Amino acid sequence: MKYISEFRQHDLARQLARAIAQTVDPDRHYRLMEFCGGHTHAIFRYGVQDLMPPNVEFIHGPGCPVCVLPTGRIDNAIQLAERHEVILCTYADLMRVPATGRNSLLKAKAGGCDIRMVYSTQDVLKIARDNPDRPVVFFAIGFETTTPPTAVAIKQAQAERLANFSVFCNHVLTPAAMLAILDAPQPVSIDAFLGPSHVSTIIGSQAYEPFAEHHAKPIVIAGFEPLDVMQSALMLIRQLNEGRHEVENEYSRAVTRQGNVKAQALMREVFELRPQFEWRGLGLIPDSALKLKPDYADFDAEQRFGLPAIRAADVKGCECPAILRGAKKPQDCKLLGTVCTPENPMGSCMVSSEGACAAYWSYGRLSRRSG
Ligand code: SF4
Image (cartoon, rainbow, N blue to C red):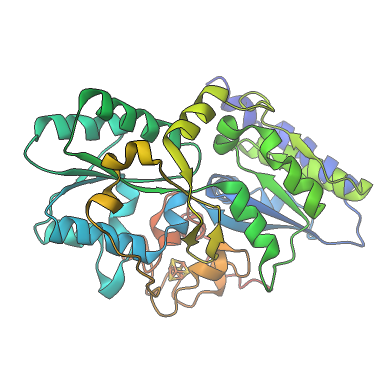
């Protein structure tokens, strides 16, 4: 298939592995953080780490929107379904993320709540049209990739005067999270970043330029196929060797410097920055998430239902918070593959199809402890 098979070719992978081996400085260690879980899964599914020299290490980052959503927001969603008797619409991965008290959206649904899995915001609008006497709430999560479709749905609902539709907004912003990782009180040692691919199709590579300059960290926007990851690693290693800290774009078949200007305008029209937002593992990060602008307040579920801010603890023993900021790896969690499995997840990193723990489980990386 075009755009997939040519990015998985064995011969090219071997050539890239040789080029990386010839380029690395044997006297230094390279710690490359992949921000996206899609990269983590490509690295383990295709054995990319095994093709790297021993001094090139991938550090797993925030992963995906499901991974970084804190427990309190899941608790909020369950409250909506239980106390306010809404039809709560959500994407499938969120259903099994543990909430407080070993609860989850799936368990709440089994207990009688009207929680429905959807594939798109258009599904939610249809449910709202079909149920005019019931409040319908879209549990919206995602980085910048999925924010524009939520904006479209809100504008569509306003145009149709769909008064029973509202959005529980949990859209978050990637550059702010990258900043928070480096500015943490006890920052993890990271030399360079594999930049998000899908997110960057929207925000463009220029969104990372101030960050790369200010923190002197090279960034390469990387596609999700194994050759993309290897080529991007080579580009980062070259930058580090040459003392450069630039934003380079390996994923040029989809990402431009400007990004999707129309989608950015749509987001600016409907959303504004929250002063701060809690991320699992990263804590409260200023200017890192979006809420609905006052013009669209009628569609804001948080305001409509008066949802309280909840700070909730993660499952005891779950290392998701440390894994999401790159401080630990899944093998460091004693629950991995014993108590915690995809069938019985204890944390978001095992639930999400882009989670680091799910990658280790799926591709058999359970035995080696990091370090
Ligand atoms: S293996 Fe499970 S319990 Fe451990 S960090 Fe991952 S999700 Fe959390």
